[in-house]
Image (cartoon, rainbow, N blue to C red; front, side, top):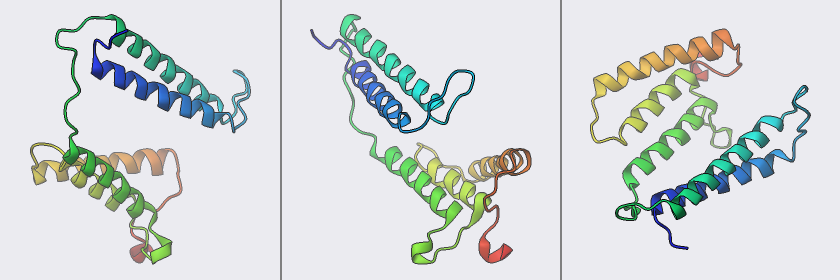
Length: 162
């Protein structure tokens, strides 16, 4: 059987692999029942649905004819680097790195860094727009996670708050 759409074929495989990994990882937790869900219930169902979706996309790529076979293009290294770097920097700034005595900088600084670094992945970079977006994201994150959900993680750098 020939692959008629490379993009759909490989994205379907990716969905299936991630779905199976989630479902398999969820089996180490108590699943429970529909009425009394355990911590593994949602990841198990999500993994199964993702794997099924991947199966459908992969099957479609083998059956539905496309014009040029939808070849896979080259890797977009710049966006890949900046998005991964933004997430790593966010995690480090939010929690710090005790192993090298780097203090936690808190939610606000982490969101600003995440927004600035991730915006460098695009074609255009306008600092004013990025800072406006970071401010809105910081305010909304503070309201959602700290005020409404009452989550306990640092908002401001530890060297300021003590």
